[in-house]
Image (cartoon, rainbow, N blue to C red; front, side, top):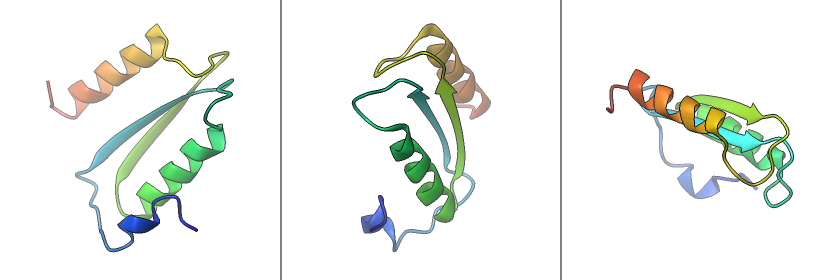
Length: 78
């Protein structure tokens, strides 16, 4: 079953820019879930970037926050 199976009818384009950030040591949501989501979104046509934060669990650190801000700036959202 596709992690985003209910989106099978949607065809995204590269104008949909998505950034996924995941903690390497996350014990709540397996890192494979991020990889599955990334793959499914790419298969739908989205432009997906991802980052694995080293030595981080189910949280966000300053590096992740900075990456998110830079990603938003590059997308011309801010």
